[in-house]
Image (cartoon, rainbow, N blue to C red; front, top):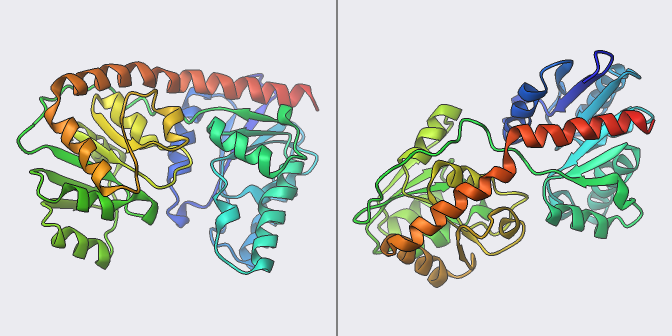
Length: 336
């Protein structure tokens, strides 16, 4: 990048515990290196006072030589950057599905998406699925303004060979929010010899479900990046049959480590997987069980998935993704 150009990556406050977006863009920051500034909004709560304080803070950062990259979860900050060089990343369209009355839904749509989208110089979506949904929902936005750039794979995730334990495989299940489908996974694994490692805080209902289905399990919470990497390396199967995802990084991380992945036959998981996964219907306990059974019993199938997965992850190389962003920042500066 030119010495005259500064890129400010803008994140939600780290106090929110919202680390996933930070983990996506930190590798890109490290690749771009020069003239990169890391900003975190002062408030993480979504209330009127916090939003106003964040907008005031963002307005004070304005500089005509800077490209501001709003990395996600705080799209409304584009309102304070109207007229500036602004790139906005949309991870999914879940904001439109947040429960609430009509007034709340109207405010979220108007001030979290519709108006900010108009203020942004360029918009990126992390999958074609999200890009298509965005353009359908907001047809007034020009398609030329919206690019698709995948999330990058962190360079720490590399092939790590492990002999598959067909007698009692370690199954790594990443996430415990309702969309991660842990309840059906437990039901599907009932009677299957395995050890389930669940990453994420378990609810009382989750614990009851694990015990009712007689699952041998370990629960891991608040893992560091290195600890999470070790969980992938120690696993035999990655379990990710989500009901809904904006991207699905555990699929890519599992493939990069050389593990077989069970995931849902839904977009965007079908888009990012390269078909090198075991697809299941996430709403069918029987189909999830069928998938686990095949992964455990069919060594040829596993070998083919691992080979295809290692090929697929090349699409998510961080250097390649950073190059796409560099070109986009330069485009924003040329057009303003």
